Length: 387
Image 1 (cartoon, rainbow, N blue to C red):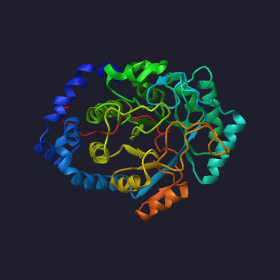
Image 2 (cartoon, rainbow, N blue to C red; image 1 turned 60 degrees about the vertical axis):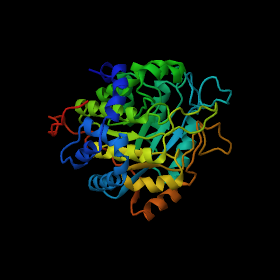
Image 3 (cartoon, rainbow, N blue to C red; image 1 turned 90 degrees about the vertical axis):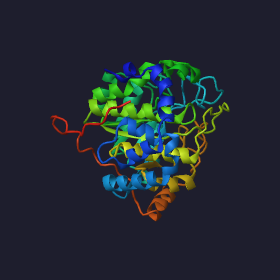
Image 4 (cartoon, helix red, strand yellow; image 1 turned 135 degrees about the horizontal axis):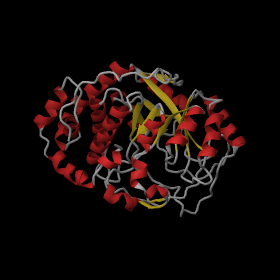
């Protein structure tokens, strides 16, 4: 059963009372848990009652992360191939009704971008496009993935949701990961932010990770846009989504990103601002909930904030990011999708990581599980009753 069938509006409405009812004793119980934490534990860790325990959560999160991932931070960089988009999303600078110059990189321009990024030292790249299926569809993406594979050891996508057969085709060409963010799990309000285009289809987008898992994509990136709706309920829904996927696609790796709303052309105002302490609470709660999930932080955040948060559970960061097509190889690229806050170049980011006592990792090695014969999944400890 795909997650869209399990995700009900009634549950979203009920979650507010569930989270608000959590007490300090519930938080202590979740922190003391010695087995795999349940969704009920997670609800306590993201509740207002957990705010006084933030330092303890941060220390435990850092301890778990070091034990599981070591003192390493993976570096990656997004490469925007196109800003053409047929959606109208209220929060995005690429929305179709914005009067901006549109650009779709051709093969020669892609090669120039890839060469420029390779010279920076990156081996892990994230290819990004707007959603314009007739022009920037699976054939275009297939060419991009195949070409990128000649330059980089790890190629991921953040593009429009595709079908299972499309993902299988891209996987055969070397695609390892796909990032797809639901933006909000609140079905009732989803249409208010997605005014036109295929992205208005809540269930199609929500079931994309299930299609990715069925297609055998090695890594799936999840997330929601912090600032659209109540972040605590969004976090619980995302945790539930993650647990669902882990049970069904046990050979797949999962990661979570934390994009916080930033300024974009169109002057969209966040209705639910997320402060820094809440942001840290979300990161550490996810680490306590799942020791194996990757946690990613982008250049949407300031350099100072990223340096403070990085030791608390983060496993991968973008560096030197530019959010416009052709940004790395031409002098005057197109309009960016949103504003970047960490403006350091990749070497500066790597130096900061080293000063914090971590090793910046530029190369993402081929996944060990990618070619392993299928067998019974490893045993999991039984979780306590979920929400």
